[in-house]
Image (tube, rainbow, N blue to C red; front, side):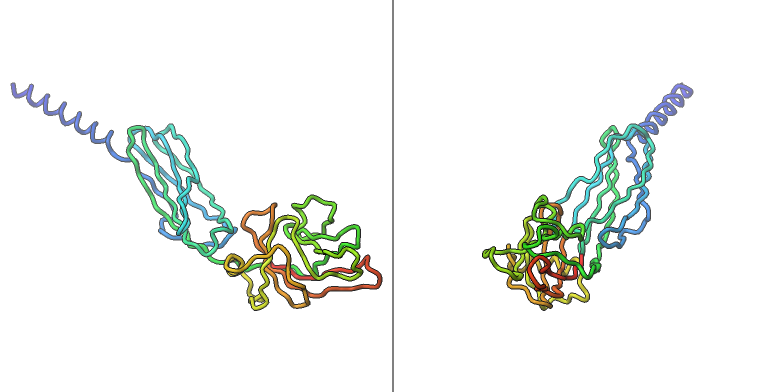
Length: 265
């Protein structure tokens, strides 16, 4: 009788131990171990993800949520193993400049048990880079009479509108001098910002000033020293450029009249 009871006890303990192991949650570790990392737009943040589980894993889910924005699923992958390792490389988009971004790493096993790791990235501002001495001609020149701010090269009115971020605007096509007005066939907008700190231009300050100002389809009459912020049109997403007018050149005749300017972007 005692042997039977001892046997029953051992079987019960083994069963409970097995059940306990089966019901244990998976373990997820994300390194570096620090909660928060820091980076600027364009930087790549590296995380090493390591998961262990007593039973087979089913799913890895990574969600990203910039502060004051909606949460979005960044990665949703099926898993078929008990152990899993993966390196995540996350490139910070320009749209997250100046924001605190939350990351939720969730792993789920085939019984529905979950393990969660949380991380944060504080995104700084981005100092814009200047390109100087840029130029394009007025409408009287049959080529190079528009400009592609994305590629920072001259374009032409005969090109696709998506590569004509700026072009001379003229109501009176008989004028023999530069009109000193610009528009954007690529659907860009303009904000005049002569008080803007061009010398220390950053992505976030340019973006915030643009969003908080009246945006125009056509510039005011341009003069040397004017500063304009523009959001690039149909070939870009959430990209901004700061333009400083250097000179408006009325050459003899009209074929070589041109605009000279610097750009920070």
